[in-house]
Length: 191
Image (cartoon, rainbow, N blue to C red; front, side, top):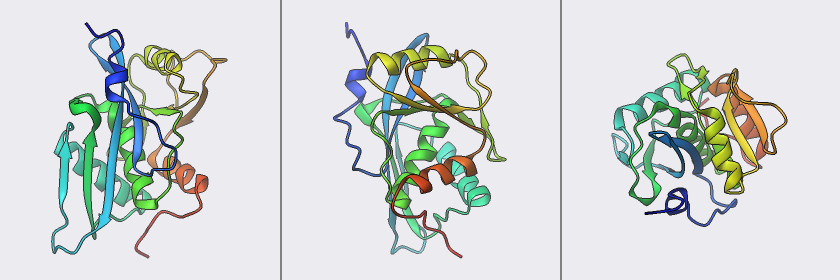
């Protein structure tokens, strides 16, 4: 038996590498942290490549469409690769926010904080929706030394005054603006 499965899915955290976000997920009733890795690179192909390992390809297409439609982040001339570390398979929509963060981080060339976790469902309107078990997700993150979390605004069961710094976000445009403001570069857009 594995005492802490999260350790299997988290490598060495490097705050210098764009395209990596840690998802605070649930496997049944047990919280697990998993690294989501994204690589967005210019494409020379007529139809850019979309490759996914460990997550639903249809869900990736939806997140890309929402980022384009509501945030102005253009992926049309880029290949997109998405990987869930450690061979783990994610099926819950709560990973949407971590995936969007990794994608924006990669295309902008801005590394996300290594001590931060992400969770929340993204709707077609670009809104970030609360998900179940927020407290368990945050407790697991704190136990493993994570000091920050980005989660949906209105997550009711999250007590204030926790050790971690909590950033609530209501929409993907808000998330993209926060990521862009945190780094030296800007998100790549087709104007």
